[in-house]
Image (cartoon, rainbow, N blue to C red):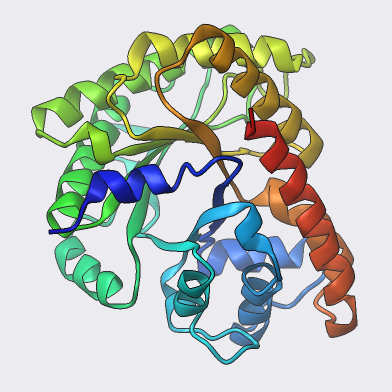
Amino acid sequence: MTDLVAIARSLFAPGKGILAADESVHSATTRLAAYGIAATPEMRRQYRDLFLGAENIEQYLSGAILFEETLDQKGDDKKLFASSLSLRGIAPGIKVDLGTEPFPESAKELITSGLIGLPERLEKYKKQGSVFTKWRAVYRIDGDHLPSPQAIHENAKRLANYAKEVQAAGLVPIVETDVLIEGKHSRSRSRMVLEQVFGALFSVLAEYAVDKASVILKTAMALSGSENQKKDSPEEAAEDTLAALLGHVPRQLAGIVFLSGGQEPAQATENLAAICRLAREKGAPWPLSFSYARALQDEALALWKGKAENVPAAREAFLERLAKISAAVSP
């Protein structure tokens, strides 16, 4: 029988985190277009290989979340990406949700789809080498009325359904609560929404008898909205983020990883370091780490520009940022 708790805990090896390389075809196309790169299937493969094929990433990464397309692709080393990662001690994971759709009860809110056919997909992904999974729920803040309690609860039910199915399939579930940074909201409002989301999520996970000891929470930080003039200090972000977690996240949880959520690489690194420092001071009961995408990729993509001759410089920038983010979570 698969020891899911051991797998979940292994993703929190000291100084290591998870690379989020799970952009859908649409998201990858948008990401590459921002750097003037046309996103053909081959260019998406090269984009994945830029990061997954870089030497020495195993020093800083315990896992990598992949997109379904990537499971069938090979790196320049002619090995399937999942196999290549496993050989270097990096656990392959897979995004299993099918993206968002409008919430019928509230047109401005989103719920996540993908429960139909999930058991069959999980069986396939496991055979392809995946050992953990991820499902993302999205929450938009707008004044005091969004997110609505109904949308929070519906996303919690879907996250719990997903986590139950994943554990039954012998895989580790990451439940992602992405409270979007877009908006004019204050940091205190962001904290309040995180508390509401955590409260609903862990209540429903308990209802569904999901084993919390093999669940990983991936979450946004408590931050002022991107259209708010207030710029939070790392210490302010850490105080409110940790308060929301300590007040509402069960201590039995396997661990918590943070998403960068539109932050600049340096900002995401500094905020993470402050959160981890404060967590140690307060004796937080779970290990903390990172599961970043853009904050790890942007500097490298700006150098790469889709050109083979730029790969060495781009990978060097990627490894430099990885080392800084690894240092942020190290004692």
